[in-house]
Length: 185
View 1 (tube, one colour):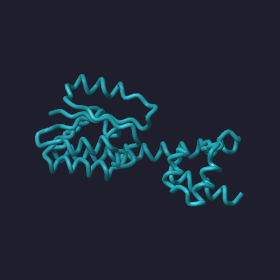
View 2 (view 1 turned 30 degrees about the vertical axis):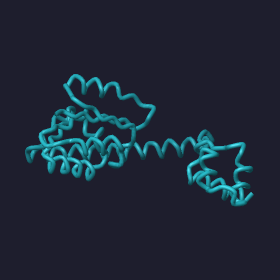
View 3 (view 1 turned 45 degrees about the horizontal axis):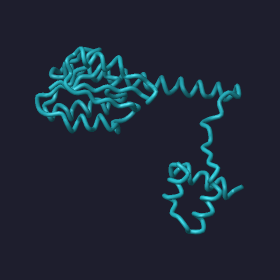
View 4 (view 1 turned 180 degrees about the vertical axis):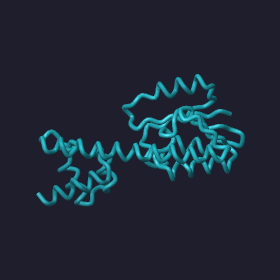
């Protein structure tokens, strides 16, 4: 079975181009992640790895869609090799069944990792410039008109922190940050 893996970095990005390629390549099943490639903690990647069986082929548009870190890339390909699953990268035309193919995979993996480093550097530079110009203020603070009431209720022991977070629609880190700010004010 030919299994396709499609990834974009954010939920705002479009997967259509990669999905069209998968259809053109006759892929039987496609797994799509809208998450950073910085690590392998991606739900659809993990589902695909669990699903793949001996004789299957994992097909990606390019190595950078599969992994942005050389170690992760080689570990993923090794997992596939142990399951006797072939790895195919359309853009780089890599055959992982040969020593030369593994070498090229390593080189392209290192390039994907270098590209990610450059992206992060450019992002940090852009943020620093925007801060100097007063254009960057960071993320907008999550506010909730009910915070004071929910906080008081929580502090009085009338509800758990988990319930308070649900009521306010806040993650634990946001909730406790707001609690600290509230208590310091």
